[in-house]
Amino acid sequence: MLVSPSILSADFGNLDRDIAMVNRSRADMIHIDVMDGVFVPNISFGFPVIKAVQKVAEKPLDVHLMIVKPENYISQVRDCGAEIMNVHQEACLHLDRTVQAIKAAGMKAAVTLNPSTPVAMLEDIITELDMVLLMSVNPGFGGQSFIERITGKTARLRELIEKSGSKALIEIDGGVNDRTAPLLAKAGADIVVAGNYIFKAEDPLAAIETLKNL
Ligand code: DX5
Ligand code: ZN
Image 1: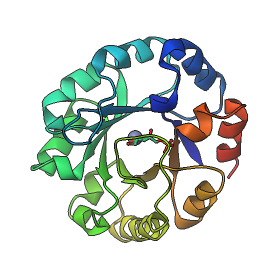
Image 2 (image 1 turned 90 degrees about the vertical axis):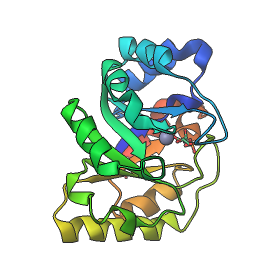
Image 3 (image 1 turned 60 degrees about the vertical axis):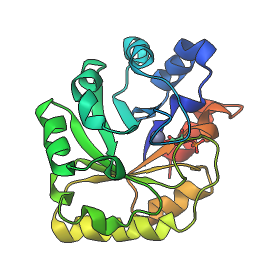
């Protein structure tokens, strides 16, 4: 299992220390949650903070934009050193155009689905995607409980990917812990995002190891 710790649950007063912990761990990337208070009912942080993370991070940045009109920020996201840019399907009127623009800017393109958005919405774009991010909570906050039906949705997405010949990886975000991650591994997930489970743990490195060893 690939693991992407979400710094939304990190200690922002000690961000360097928390990123250094992720650098030392076997985590595969760093998940960065940007919220605009419009697409989701919360505001997190923006580009100056991502730039500060970029300076210390030794892992690829997996940037999840919970914002309206993400297509307006592609070059800024790239300039923050993002390897993967996640945009919500629900936020993109011209999703194909946005996906192509992300790739043309030299990043991997990922599309995120809210819990209520069916996998079928991606049928006609799945072969263009590097990753699909399924939300297993309603986006906006860390520390929420896992929506159980996302395991079935993960399996359906796996089927669509196999059937279409797409190379997209499946990432799951929200309420991931040592109980839910094994269910997701079984359903065909490639990557799990985890915020609270890692950063609020007594031993965050051990929490990352638990997820890595699934
Ligand atoms: C939710 C964010 C998640 C969040 C996950 O809107 O997209 O990445 O940080 O946090 P946990 O793992 O605590 O549910
Ligand atoms: Zn996220």
